Length: 578
Image 1 (cartoon, one colour):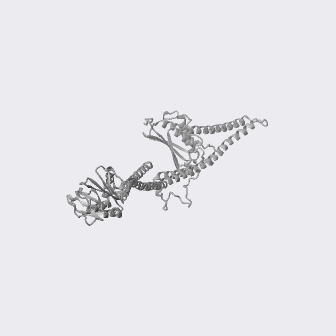
Image 2 (image 1 turned 90 degrees about the vertical axis):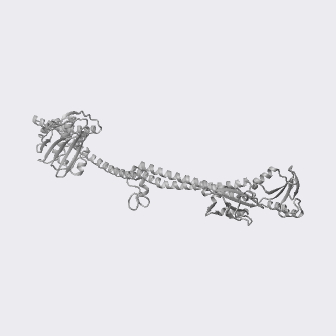
Image 3 (image 1 turned 30 degrees about the horizontal axis):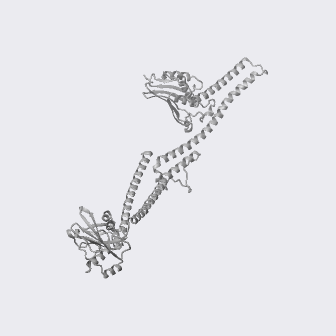
């Protein structure tokens, strides 16, 4: 898998995992906040608890109800009690229940339930298998206890001294209202206390919002309302409860937010170590290479951080394996290039020195002969003048050829040499060239022969530069080999390519010479034997072959011989053989 695909997959998987984690965390936070709010509401006033909270905290196991300790604690604090009744009326769970309460309720018991001294609340819960359970919660109602004491006394509806003392003892009061809502009797009540019917209904509907706990009784015979009131121990107005809930919510929100911040910091540090640290290391490596230091950076202990103790790539860097491999390759290449550049500079200086010597020698001859000719101290014979002229001409031609070679190699390097190709039979062309070349002074002591399986092979070439290629390569073969060396020129062709081979059984070349054979600044190890060349011949031949769209392959072995293969590739049927 490529680096881009692996990084994409890696980041997508990480993003999905983090997204799932964050969503689950947010969902869990909402559930946690909801439970916390419900619990805060329950602790403030159990009668206001929701069915959802009861459903979570009251479980049914083997037809028995299990009540959560938080619920028990809240009921105990309020002095109340709780029963869990199944759909058949059986009590399957209870807590702090008065002894007088039944263990089973009939249809009429449930509907007519009005317990003395308690305020009753109901919740209906849906449990497993669509079964229903009824939650009955009762909390002590002091005002009702006092009212029931009055109703049971023999003096009712009159208020006797004993009852008055009972009111004072329990810090309670009584008021009697007529049909018009006027207070017709009041004892131990706060001054100017008078309720409207809406206030009484509101206190009965939301008793937690009132500072007083009231119970009423309608005396039909006199059309009077007896109202008994006491201090409300369950006073917990909505704004206070809301403040408690808000405080709980804020606290929980801060916990959740803080947890997310910590998680984000941990993830950032983790990503920094997993991706940032390797990237910074590789950037440092690249920066070092730009300054000429190609070795991988080391830490303070002298270790290479990207490698583990076993010497293999550290798991933190494995996702960037291709990049690390490329950096190693680049480092090695740059080191080789720098070494090659130094070698090239050295070789070029040596070549320039040799070339200067090659030019200086004929220049010395020209200067010397011209000085002699210009001198009137000696009368030269016509034969002497002709000999000096011949030598001067020879040296001038040599210098001209040297300069032309230098100019030609630079034109080839810059693609400034026009190549005018014509379809030519190279078999007859090479035969004709070899017949002439074999008669040269240097080639006379070599055995040169030609071989081709085809009578004619047509190839698109520039005739002038093709001849230059052959001349340079064959001149090199005869120049640096001993007398008696056999040189074979072989031509073979098929539909894909044409190969011209120049094979000899001469002294051969070492690996360094083969490597630098076509370097225009390089002179091989045999140049001391004959220093009349410019060192550009093989470079020019190679550049001309490349300009024709071909290539040269060299195979050589010391004291065995050399094979030079010129390969031209065919396109669009430019070649025919017969």
